[in-house]
Image (cartoon, rainbow, N blue to C red; front, top):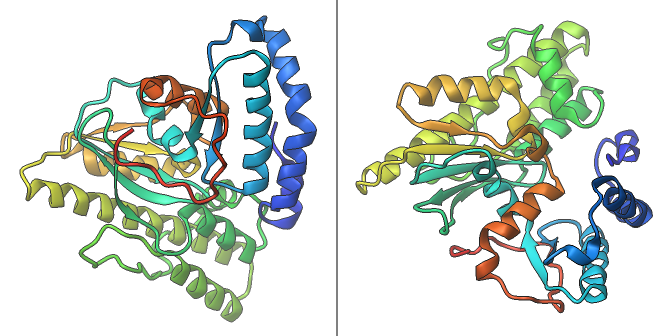
Length: 308
């Protein structure tokens, strides 16, 4: 169920999101059990996202799932939303380690290093806006629909990607962190100085998309070189999260890293954006490391631990 109600506001409204969860979750779950012909009493364990995210939505989802866990006397396993994304490519790929994981969502832009399957280390992240947020805010400034990523990708096909030279904050920094708020500010000023016609929109979308792609590729290349200096040779990159649906960004990543004999992995399309399947898969992947924790409190700013 997709919450279309947010489109009129140009972004997610936390209160409406939580109310929608509460309204839809129970009927949806009953319907899914019937459709899949699964008896809930045969389920071995229950899991739900407990962070990071909007606290209202986390409370609804986790409380509902805890109730099922108690009712059917089975373990409840709290799961990290980001772990769900990070491990999603292992569902449909044989991962070659060591690898970098590039997480691109509306709320996060991060680079993780995985020396092996059960170790996750955060090595870079956005210090302000996430990349998905930057897409949405840029689209909103241009008067486009929400979510903005799809709209920008669509218009950019008719634009000149070299028309505007947009800033690339922190691109020359030694670290692997990102910054996107400055790009949004620059675009806001550009819009105020120009006529908001189709030609302008197309060129700006194309230039914005190219700039984002170049920032991502540069940071990943820096990460690969950083580990190379330590005699650690990265063999693969996983691209996860909703922004990984962008075909332009995917094409440029593949063109760049295929030449370096580095495998690029993506999740299944159905597991790309936020979804329950990736949370279930992450739970199955590391359940042996988890304990039943019915009293776990949702954490809006939950961090991924270095060791699963």
